[in-house]
Image 1: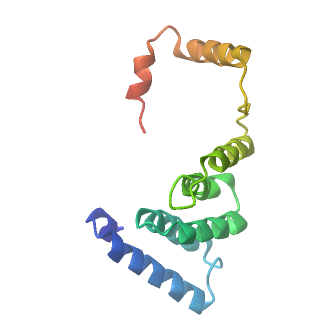
Image 2: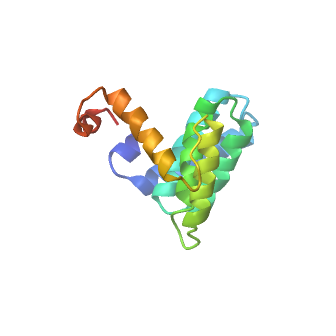
Length: 143
């Protein structure tokens, strides 16, 4: 993380890959669950940032196969969708489809072809949640 904070993206990526290699050779990959998950989440982000989308996607698949909770899978799901929008093999349509599937996994149902009544229903929910506050209050929410 120190390398990433200093902007040394390629150096950080190399260090993270070296750490993963050592973990694999030690036979401890996924035996040290928290460490492996943290390392792979950092590596997914790092590979994505240096343009190695296929490697990022491979690490995403690894996390999705081994992570034990939806919280632990969150970063992998986020980058799974992002990989469809980057690189030479961009497929925005597939990204949307996968994004909708992921939303359903988390209990959020979004119709693939919303009707006017769907939009009106969601607008009423939002207005109720805002309790007569302007939409600009949403911009003050933490990221």
